[in-house]
Length: 469
Image: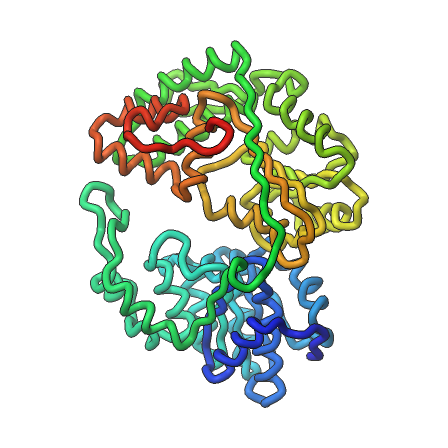
């Protein structure tokens, strides 16, 4: 392998620290170049004769595009074998092939986006652990050590070496560090002895954020509101009453069902129930050309002009509706497309052959480097702040030279308002609901206020953000 690009000083600092240990973690925020840093560590081991080959596990959505990213920094990459992490969940054949591969020669194992293996009970995690037992040199890559709490650390560090944390099972880890919620089964209420965990991983960890190592242009936030049509508003009120009556504080799926249904209505869809009202399906409530959310999108695109734009959607049908309006000037990027289709559409957008890339946020959170573009629109949001930040950083990363213009489209006096408030506070809406329900003992009143964007009236908190949200 031959490296083509130079390290930034902070990347060199990471290499200088981790070159002295056989296993390590690069917790470097998106856009800071953890891939280039990993290649340097690999090259040093190859040159020293410590390893003969590399197994690079990455998100399935990145698998096809990763070679292109690696070729930006290195050539002669034949020794690197790439496989999708999620595929290990279902493919026994792939698992067998990779297990054989790492036993044929000394192998450097890289687990890219290691939070994908944070669940110690998942098949993919168990299989990565078995593969890792045959690799002396190992590296995990992620933007942050945890997504929710320090319980995320156990499986990632077990892959590297169980002796670092000192626990051979999740149960012993849990007994020493996790306090469970008495009211909500399976929910962690508190993490204990955090200092111990930090001390144990510190010698093997390099961590950096964009704010500390990069000088980037800022982000400019625009909140773009619209009103539901009379038909939408009536349907919104009707469906909310049905689902509120089915709300169960101890069954989170009833909350998710409520959120998704109400969000769908704000996007122009209708909710139909079966006779027992236990199951609902979506249908097109209003035509795309009459959809006020889509009209607001067209207003924003008109103001942006001829510049390229990334549009993030929550529902796949939203992507279809936008494509029906924008036509050949737009290409989609979502999970139902094949890897080849997604790659072709991303390449067309990157080459400037299309003006708009319409993406599902969950699909686009990994492996998209779009710093050549500086406009992004969140056509609709979910309540996951983590994936929201990842989506923003597809554009706001090393190489960006312009202010990144971020537009949030939301329906006034609906759950959209509450979601934006939660995102501004870096909270998950479902967690806030469960906490406040338990604290205030008035679940339906609280949820109803949240559905109509008036949550602060019940919990006494100032949740306002810019532009009157």
